Length: 300
View (cartoon, rainbow, N blue to C red):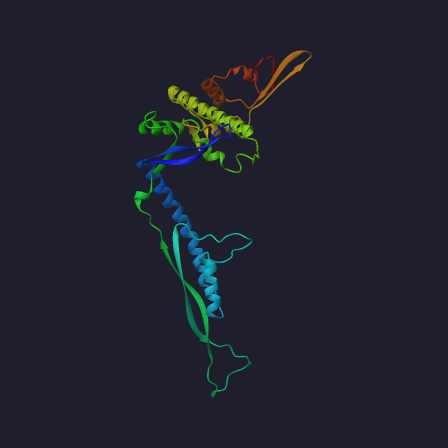
């Protein structure tokens, strides 16, 4: 599929270019998406059960108030604090008004006379019927790749291969880097600074991927393990590797023109990682004589 879209070149020139779209289906990705959908739906079902209990416990004096409440629950109301109401994502809820006749409360105290006719009134409540959304299995596993490369310069198979290779280099890093806790907002206006930040981000993610690859290859080759989040692991992520070095303290300073090194917290797992990524263990020579020792050392 080819579409023509406007493209802006570095010199500010605008021109129409062919955007080539490649639609790919992956059965493995479809299975992962289906499992994630099922888990998210189960979590939402628990929230809906609590929501239904709350809704059906409310009483309204008139049908108009009940209809107004339906508009709020269905996402057609004004919302609160300027936020747009958000309906449920994995379920559909149907609300209907139910009128219930109940005895009217007497205004006078004491036992009513025998000749008094009991009075009744209508009260209104909402009844909720829930329905789980079951999307078709054919909706899962689809990916759309966009490129400006022409078919004669890069075939469909080559485009797909290039995209899949990104999953072992830079692409996985963008999953956690989108977390607000992972990167603070950066406001740039000049295109040059935006390009520089993008380059540094990609280089950093490449280093992140290389560390993970080298550590995993070394652990597999030597049949070793390092401490992970849930016990020893042979397939750690770079985040786990970096967290492993959190308790390590290294101070390099000079006293009377003599370089001194103080090290604390180094363990066997740290040496394994250093060997895997090619870091000279001279950084941690202070460990040779025990913790918190002062020994001459010259880090690389």
